[in-house]
Every structure is written in structure tokens, then in C-alpha cells.
Image 1: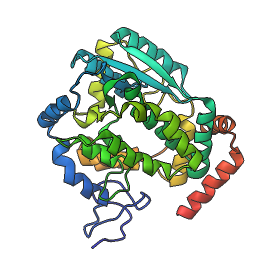
Image 2 (image 1 turned 120 degrees about the horizontal axis):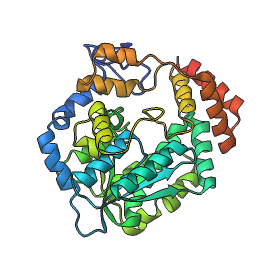
Image 3 (image 1 turned 30 degrees about the vertical axis):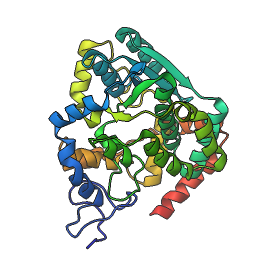
Image 4 (image 1 turned 30 degrees about the horizontal axis):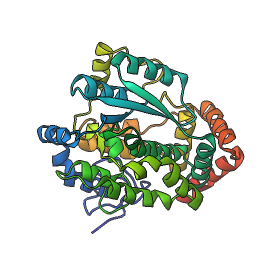
Length: 356
């Protein structure tokens, strides 16, 4: 029996989270789904063996392509792959049109320091503008546009440079924030494939994801994603998608400590998302639409993992948006994508009221 609860009795997810339901004890469907894979997620001895199996190179030019934003997580992953695993990697960074100079500086310093080949992936500005305009106008979130662009780059790039696998640095809370039974989570097939002993054919796995994304955008943009953004994958064959932190314990303090002790990486202005010039604007927009902290699902995963308590999770839900900075950044986005700022904000407010 499912009940119409307002807040999960175990995590902090509430009824505003899409596709949520609650059992008779008031536990949400995301907690139930997490329980179905939690033993796999914490068996680190086996996960290490599985990781080594996933990254085995069978004659490719590079052992791995690595997505690199210059933030602590991607820097840590790059450092570990080079120093601990001794892999021959090539790092790449998607320039989405809103990269900060601080990020570029860190990226250039670290890849030089680690002796790693690196490339900026730069898309045609017309494609960027069309993607942002389509997604922001329809879903009121530039982060979704960035996610589509980022996944396209990660899926395509290893095929372009002939790397055996694509390795990314998303944390477990980021990877399984929407994980539950059914097919509502686009990232779920990649998580399940990553935890499986036998990997699916990457072409089959990506086609499932690409078809879902194509339904969210107009036909012309869907065609552009396939013909332009994923052209090397279709031409040269797709490569496996490996999440480093799916196989390794994630500890933020340890990551920062190890990086600051062994590399030149350090926190300069902000710990998270300093690389994005419109981060505060996107955050403000998402929080306004949800009428809550949009990171609620990720915070709930942290509670399930035991890395924070439920009380700490409730404290983290409190938002403190910099409204003036957010509005200036959103205006920058609207100018870039040729979107009416007034219409965007009006639509966001109306959506928020309808949702509630």
C-alpha cells in the first residue's frame, strides 16, 4: 500500500520530488530503490576488482578519456588515474560558453603538472544558443542543457581520440539522485551497467539514452545531437562509460586533503561550481521553481549512505540565494540565448504556483 506522505520518514525527500511515492511506513520509493543496490555500492573490494575489469585496454591509443572541469572531483579522478593506476589518459573540458577564467587557469595548471594531454571541446555557438534556448524556454533550467551537452561530449570524445573507456567524476549522490524502480531516471541504465559483471554493448546503452533525450527537444535539435555532437561515436563505435566514484569511496574532506598535499590544486573562491559563470542564476531559478532546495534528492542519498545525519540533511536544505547576483547571471544567459528575461521569470513564477 502506498500512502500520500509529505516527507519521507527516512531521508528528506518530500512530495515535490518528481515520480515519488511512499510505502505504508512513509519511506519513499527512492529509499526503497537504494536498498536494492546498497550492498553492491559499498562492497569496495569487489568494486575495485570490477573497476579494473571495466578499464582494461584492448589495443586502443588511450586507456581512458577523462572529463575534466578543474573542480575537486574531476581533478582527484585525473590524479588517481595517472598516479595510482598508471593509465595513459587524455583529458578534455567542454567549454559550454560560460566557463570562468578561474576554471581555465586551474585546468591548464593541473594538466601541465600531471603531464596529461588535454583538449577543450568547443561547440559551434549557434548549437549552444539553440540548445540553451530550447531547454531553458521549455524546462526553465540551463543545467539540463549543460547536462545534455556534457553527456554528448563524454559519449562522443573517447571515440574521437580512440580511448578504451570514458571515465567521469560524478559522485554517488549525483549519479543516483533519481534512481528508483521503473524507467524514469535516464542515468539508471548506466549505473546498472556499471555495477554488472558483464557490460552491455555501449551502442545499445547509449541509443536507449539518446532516444529518451531526443523526445525532450525539437526534431532539428535531436538531429543535430546525433549528426554533429555524436558523429565520432556513430562513425568509430561507442566506448564504455565508467563512473570512478561508482567503484571508490567518496570522501570530500579526504579528496581536498590529498589534492592540496600532492598537487597545486586548492580552493580559491568557491568549492563547488566555481567554473560556471551562471551557476548562481541557475541555482536561483531551480530553487524558485521547486520552492525548495533543488539538491534535496542528492542530500537524501547522502543520508542513505550515512555520510550525514537526517538532521544535518534538513539543515543543508536551507537556501540562501544571492538574488542580485543570480538575476545578473540569468540576464547574461538570456542575452546569450536570445530569451526574454521577463518572460522567463514570469513563466518560472507561474510554474512554481501551479506545482504547489
